[in-house]
Length: 230
Image 1: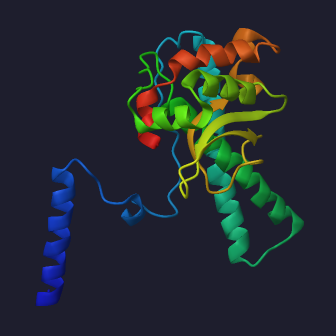
Image 2: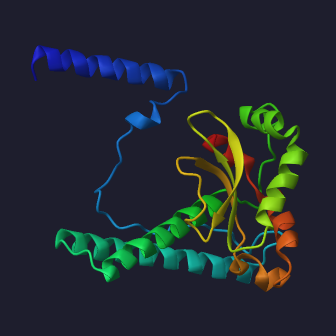
């Protein structure tokens, strides 16, 4: 290692040490992905024990099984699409695989965001956290935001209710993700997502029980996770 490289390495180490000493981390844009870029996705382990208050054990178990199916199909489609592209294929069949990949991948990722942020021991939102202040500044109060969010979650259609952040301006918006991948505001960052496909609630609440299900999810939202995403 020459002198210039050594000095650069030492300087980078000093900056990193300073950040960690302050309880900070490097800018996320500077963090390189780990692992092989073509590694398969593995289902994440979400352990909800005997279930969650308002969401029965069987409902949760079936939902987790459905999530694992999205992971399996995402891995299969990624292989098929890449193999076809390497062969220079662009047939209607390949194009359909590419469209399907968007559905399956988004379904996988949204379920991870959803399950990661619900807990039997959920923390309530912090009134002093910048996210809470941003919500109040946008909608007037937390309760006013929740009313608008619930209305989004219960609108007719198949999909997800979401609270998203525009990283360019910091603006918060309630959003509706049709299916998994449609009507998405491109570039926004999901902070909170609630699955309102029928499989998420019909077993416990019936076909017309979506609003009751959304009410049941509310106290399960772990705001430590949501605030960290902000």
